[in-house]
Amino acid sequence: MKNKNRWMKISGYGLLIVVLMMVGLYVYGSRIQEKYPDFSSYNSKPLGTKALYLLTEQMGFRTARYERPSRFLPEKVILIAIKPDIDIFNQKLERKYLKSWLESGNTLLLVDDSSNLKKYDMDAWGARYEKDLNEQGGVSIYSVSQGRIYFMDNVERITNKGLKAMDPAVAFIEMLDSTKAKDVYFNEYFHGAGVRGITILDLLGQNGLLLLLQILLAVGIYLFVKSRRFGKPMVVFEIIKRQENENLFALAGMYMKAKAYSLVLELYLEFFKKQLGKYLGYRVIPDEAELLSAVSTNQFLERKGLRGVLSSSLQYTKFDKKDGRQLLHLISTLEQVRKEME
Image 1 (tube, rainbow, N blue to C red):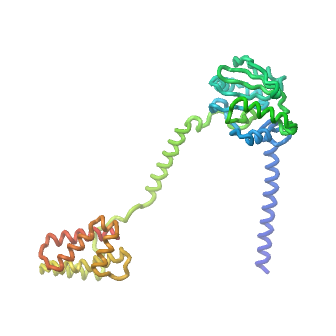
Image 2: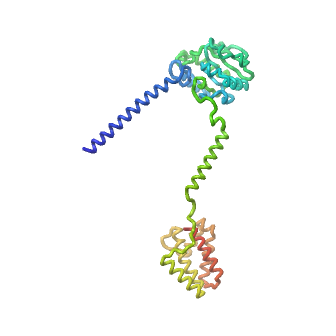
Image 3: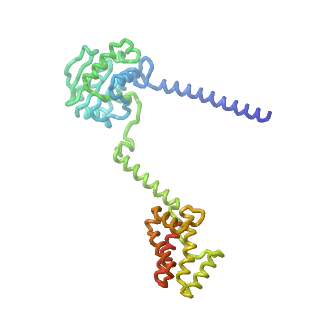
């Protein structure tokens, strides 16, 4: 009964959290929808132009929303400004960079009511009137050096509500086709969206950003390496005082004094083969032929030349050699390999 009440309490709190989240999302979602201004391509209300944006995309154009100042406009795109905020559009730096962008051969599609045409001050750009495209819904063409401005009259015809008539949609797409453009940018910066001014990413550029990421990655790797120990622990050259080791060294010392070199090496080989067998994964020490075969298939041991050293050691014990220098060389080589296997 106690557990049941606890689960009921947890379920009640969980349900309350879900309800509060749903209310919060509803309120927040409403605020998001309300913040989009009229004629914005984000706005799905009657005076928004989201339908025009989706239509342009569906007709095969590569569409994007542009939310940066004109200073950072890419080349070879057509920029669509639908009833922009005049105060933002007519800012000194904004007009300066937009004019420079037009003069380099780019195209601006400006959509507004003809009564507002004077506010854009075409003369200040040195724009020259070329012709009208009356069959395409009241479009006038102006040239600015190598670039062009298409001024489309009657902005409400291309809103979500206006496109229900179909004819404005056809006229708009035909006009885009006449520009030979493939990349179409809907300007949301003129509707108050995006970031004003220069950001650190603008200063760095693509190459600078890549370099910064490489530097941060290198610093991260360096700190990671410094915070962790890599490789094997440093070998401390001291004899661990275990009973079997004491017996081994005592016998080896006694055999050395008696110049029974083969016995010294044989004693060491028994100790070495135990370590080698464990390293190769054997539970018991294999015979010599099997051990040599296993060594030859191990890249590390083969690189160390262990097969040759073992063969020489076995030959040394078999023929009972008395060469003290060779004995020391064999044992030191085997000992070095043994330490690296630990």
